[in-house]
Structure formats: C-alpha cells, structure tokens
Image (cartoon, rainbow, N blue to C red; front, side):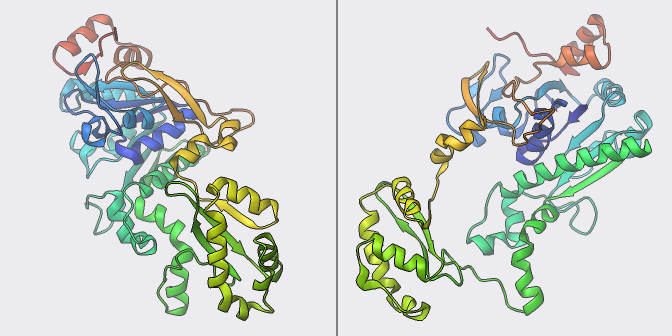
Amino acid sequence: MRVLSFGTFVAGGTAGGHLAELGADVVKIEAFDRPEVLRLPSFAIGPTFTEQSGAPQTVMYGTLTRNVRNLSIDMRQEAARTLFHELVKGADVLIENFAGPTLARWGCSFEDLLVDNPRLVWVSLSGYGRTGPRANYLAYASNIAGYIGLTSAWGYSHGTQSDYVTGVTASLGAVGALAEVERTGAGVYVDVAQIDAMATLMAPLYAEPLNNGRDYERADNVVPGSWFTGVFQCLGHDAWLAIELEDHDDWSTLCRFLERPDLEVADQAEAGERSGELEVELLVWLAQYTNHTGAHLLQKAGLAASAVHDSEDIWRDPQLRVRGYHVRLDQPTYGVVTYPGPIQHLSRTPGRLDTAGAMLGEHTHEILREWVTVSDADLASLESTGAIFQAPEQE
C-alpha cells in the first residue's frame, strides 16, 4: 500500500505512522522552506538539532514520523503540482489535515485527483469536520477538549489527547475505505473530525445529562459504591498508590494487614464513619514504601491496589518491554533514541519499526524514481528551480 501524506503535527503524523508500522509505504511531503511544524524548536522535547541541509529537526518530529519516508516538493510551483498528480496515480491513500481547502486551491481537490486515480482513498483530518458551520474553524487539541467537555471532566484542557485519538481513528478509516475500494472500485473520501472521534469516548459522560438532566460531576478519586477508595501518597517524590475496598471482606483484610483489628466495622455505614481513621493508618504504613512496593504487598494480601504510573514507570514497565513496545533506533541527526513500537500485534503480518524520522527531502530522488520513473536530467532540472529538494548525504 502506498500512502502520500500531507499530515502534520500529532494527528496527521499519528495517522500515517500507524499505517507505516503495518507495512505501508508512507511518504511524507514537506516543502524545504516550510517544514513540518514539529521540527521547530518550540515543539522540541529536549535539545534542538539541525540537519546538514540546515533544516531543523527534533526528537518529537522523529517520533511521529517513524517508519515514514520523506519527499520534499514545493506545491506552490506548477512543476511540483504536475509531479504530484503523477504520484497520485500510483498511490492508494492520501492523508491531509490542512486548515481549509489548501489542496483545492492547488487544483488538487478530491474530484481533481479522482481523475488521476479513480480508486484513491482521501483521508481528511480536521477539528470540526469538513462540513457544517464550523468547517473552517482552526483547531488544536486544547480547543477540542473544551468543546467536547473533556476540560470540564478532567479539570484542565489537554493539548494532544484528541490528536492521538483522531490519528488512530483516521488510520482505521483508511483501512476500512480500502476494503470498500476493493469491493466497488470507486474512490472514497474519509472525513475525520476530532470532535466526532472524541465524542465517542465521551459517551458515558454525556449519558447522565442527556438521560437524567443532571450535569456530569467529577468524582475525583472516589469510586461510587465502594467501602473505601482513594489515591494516597507513598515514599518518594510525587509517588501515589490507588486502592479500593469493595466490601466488608476487603475492609477486614486491610484492618488485619495494618494490625488494627479495632477498626473493624459492622456495615458500610459504619465504614463511612471510620474511613478517616483507616486512612490515617494506611498513610502511616505507605510512608515506609514506594508506591510499587506498597501495591505489591497489598495485592499479595488480596486487595485491589496499584501504583499510579508516571512516564518513567511506563518506560521501565516490564510488561511493555516483554511485548516489544520499546524500540531503539539510530537517527542520523540526533542519534539513538527509544521509540514507541507498534500497538497492533497481528499474527501473520506483525507491525514493525525500522527507521526514526527521516531528514527533510531524504528520499526525494528515491521516491520519484520508484513511483514516477523520473530521469536524472529531470531531477536535476526540478531541483535547480526549487520544485524539489534532495537532502545531502549525512556525514
């Protein structure tokens, strides 16, 4: 499967990345003087880097374009647009999340490209969808979080949550559309809106106001119906442990575990009255242990307890490591980094991760020779006018 991607930032990068990990030849398109925004220092996690060509590079960009090849063409030039139409003839999927009808202004609307390739799957990602009164609104995940109610539910506006959800939704949409093309032979336009993708996840929170007329209220760390529940501080910096006592047996088990049989109760009402005393004893005990050790000991006693993981815990997690989630790759500009591996584990066609983010224009000549059969003379001519850019060999 061949994929042309104008996908940018987290949503567009995630959509193409998942398809690439599953074996698709995903080609990301960038103009040399207008590189992907995630390359810029403002989006760097850690230090910034400069490729030999002078283009910026960041680890975040490398992470979200892993397994993807890079083609640098300047769509503002007619020669580049002509080249793009030729590329579309050999493509199966096109991904874009431009703000507004950018491709249409270049003469590359869905209808235009169907002339080149009647079987094309066009996957369009946006904040509010490509139809309706908000179709032309600009969107970031933080805007979407407020719009769909996530900010209210969490108490803060998340900056990337809907990007990741939408990216995965878009990649699934692409696969579904390809199946439709196989059945009908006709191209498919896939319109993926962040508000739609996130609303499906928010459905349980919408149920209360829609059915009972009561607005959703954050329950903090309390599980309704439990005898005792919460998240408690342990030994170490910002270390927390979650525990839930579901019934009388759990309450009695924790009392025996803490060697406080005097805190035994007759029923849930009395447990509610004495929960403060039990919490004090639990905090005294947890102060001796890290959250992981505390969780292990409480689980061994038969209680539902777990460490609250931070990012480092996830990176070190043995379950993820055994399942091959962590993959170390060498990127030419900034060296060896550990990346998230494929999330789909297919029996016959397992996903793979081979390369980190490419340099800008790293595969321009290679892709054009494979997809369009452009001669060396034509490549030199296109490069001289700036219609294409080929990255120099990395020293």
